[in-house]
Image (cartoon, rainbow, N blue to C red; front, side, top):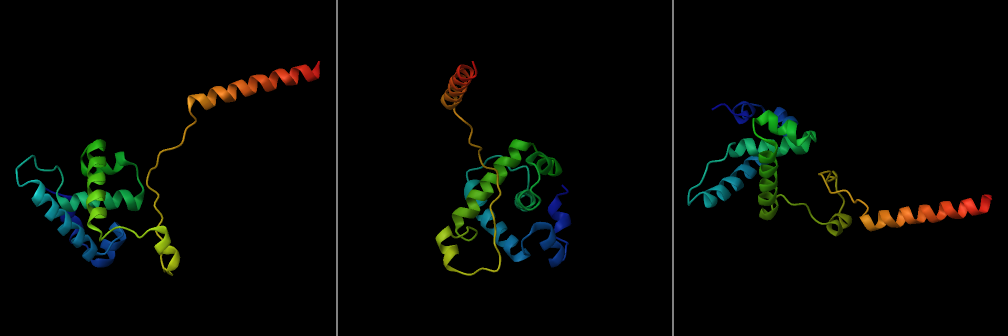
Length: 153
């Protein structure tokens, strides 16, 4: 089975860094961490994943680096959008829980001087007004309009 990893693993260090945004040794640490996790998970058996571990990590890195839609990232790997989302969330949780790939908190960053700054631009929910607030706004508009009519007569 031909995978993206078969093509990417032949890239030199500079080309690999340009494509993924991480150096090869960091990528190898991610693969090793996920392999250990997968061994524990599939000891009892189960369905094999649609993508090999390297392709799963490449999917995550492509999604973060290019900030493409989940649909386009999933299509380029030949999987569905929900499957891609599950893979990304699963790998995020594993990498963050390992402690090797998590970022320090705000207070730690304020006390130190850094050469680079990483900003989290992942999707976040949008605050929408609740129905009660909409009703209050309509009531205010109605009262305000009535007052204006009284003053113009």
